[in-house]
Image (cartoon, rainbow, N blue to C red; front, top):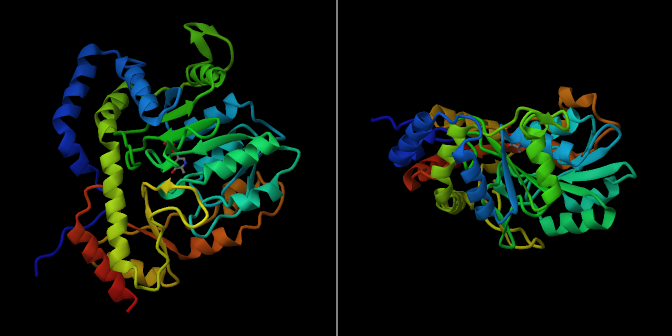
Length: 375
Ligand SMILES: *Cc1c(COP(=O)(O)O)cnc(C)c1O
């Protein structure tokens, strides 16, 4: 029997092939101009991304981790400050809090969305709390109306971690435009991916935008005049050129990811699995997820993943350990975090391949393997 081609978690080759002419030409143009640092493409991409998102300012930086770090610095967070976030996220969310010497305070997640459970946040607020960092995990946006209302009532800043949510909307508005600062990553496998590292911060606040621009470039607004100790965290010109080629297609890419999720649901909906919601769960405003990952829950996760592996189909566990249980974070906690939902989720979650080019026939084959594994 002819073997099927292996199915990866994400296939970046097809997307590049479909835009190859345009991307190669724009890279050749960068090489011709030799304006490699803060060239025309960085400025143009910042304007185009700001227009797409509906943000007053979009400021490129070196990666998504730096975006979060720059946001913490621009808001003046530091030692003694508590920052509330989710334990079910990539480590970078908490690393950025630790970089500035602030204390991460982990609040448990909503089992339906895998996102920070806003209803539990209020009880975690102390007189040291300065900010909330909601993460739009796996491309499912957080209920930013609820976050915004709580933050306004308690005088807290909001930093959105949008690394996995480029193009996701909340009541028609883009993630990254609903807090004080939005933080994006263009890591190659993200929904809008560069061909190397890249990141961006967004804000509507002119003063914060000025601070962010200065911080990302050696604390300097005027060349060789340094007002503060800053960083070397610029978006690379070649990455900006590639991102400009891809940005016009992001809505289509995200629609294709929703197609994949909808097809998984029709093929897996009758099985004893917890599938991610295709739209907002009850009681949430209109949320449009962009399925950076398609993440399910099953007590038979290991059986399913073994069956997939036997068929050369990738699957992965995002994330096996909640952040409050990570060795690196232990020394940064002030108390014992209690996040049983996140812990149970880490024990049962696994993700199936999802990318815009994933064919219906391949989705059906993946679903059949999952079905047989738990039959
Ligand atoms: C990828 C990611 C980051 C970090 O982005 P990098 O560009 O890899 O530094 C931060 N937060 C979340 C939730 C991520 O998925």
